[in-house]
Image (tube, rainbow over all chains, first blue to last red; front, side, top):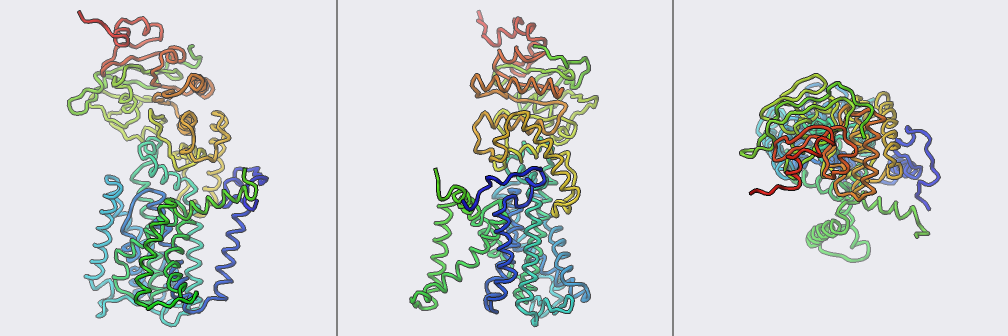
Length: 358
Length: 263
């Protein structure tokens, strides 16, 4: 009743190929935009921005990046953390070497560095697949972090070994550095997320997206149609690493403020991988939902017992939280192995007939 | 039934092809030609080397000996995507569709080679990328009309029944507007009615689009009915080559198919 295509006739292919062909989807996106542009900034305080929403958006960008590679092109990667690190360190080097360069441009340029390295580490994908490729990308993860730790040039020989976001302004508004307001950083991260999510959606529904999925589903048939496996896979690695690189830059410059390579260790790679598995492989919306799930669930588990009047010692609460988090993930994957995106699709299919299913 | 489009012009010429895997000779000195516009069948018992022959033609296997001339270009080794660029499309014995994608997307993927817009336009979905999507959608829709699969346009192909999947696979190959279409057992596992449908589509493709077709098939009545000329393979050797009538009466072919008593 509330969600159905019936009666929404398309008279041109162009209309049928629109990004959100169904009017309810357009409303949904519009409402989400209003919530994120107006409602959240109005209600959220410093804690919510810093602890929840900004990291959620950054993770979502990285998750979209990994989903392009793993969900759409079918190439398993455990190097997400490293590609994010490249984005962060490239931003640091660029904005300390060229202090006058617009920081937003620097973010995008850092993504390009990450894309370049992604292409290099994508070359083995022509020969190896699945878990073996994951191991090869693991090499990227360890090698790149080791390099950033070992070679002082990457962190400007800073004795503490950390990189710190320098204060930078765009149009007179402080965007990075200790004095940047949470709300400013929120809007920066949100704009990146919206633009990148729409671009990703456009890419995956066009020729490039189809050739990625063709390689994923049946690489031999794809090759016989004329899709070059190496070119297509490297394109996926490049675009995926670009997204991860920009996410990594935002991770340091719009969220943490300063960090060492440990911030980008293998745990981060796994975290992003869990997000896309839970959100749904091969879905842009799923990447965002997965990021939201993984970020919000621990916060919910911490805050929920006190809300209903149960007070637990904080160390016990922390352990319980981890146990419940793990159990929920396992439960969730058994119930719906295709993730939140599939669940969302099922809800839509049910709503199509509701309240008169027959 | 001989088709009217057959000309004397040779589109594909296969000369002295030998292919072996280790010690096993899959193909042994095979030569035949395919004329522009004809329907050419390759038949033979299981393991005769029919699929290997198709794999050689579209560059998936590289024969150790012999050469293949397509549209006047001779080549010894080539990559499958190069063969696709030259205008060779194929379907598979075991369906090889992109199961996570819809029927429409599968067929649009068949148009992949003809689409050129770069990643920046695609990310914006503007300008050339947008025009291209609409333009190629029109071609894809013509294929969909032709194969009468309008109602499953947006269904993920993994959910479709076998017969329809075979049809979608044919559609994906047709979307590339190939000069040469290789069909590997297009009617395997179908019932009588579905076979008749598939025969009709194959004849229509040949007749209306003028596509040259090489097909592998086990059903003799189908082969004899729709093909112009037949190649018979057995254990990698070539037994016979000629019109269905000639092949039918060939003693070697009868022996291979019906068996012969050794005294």
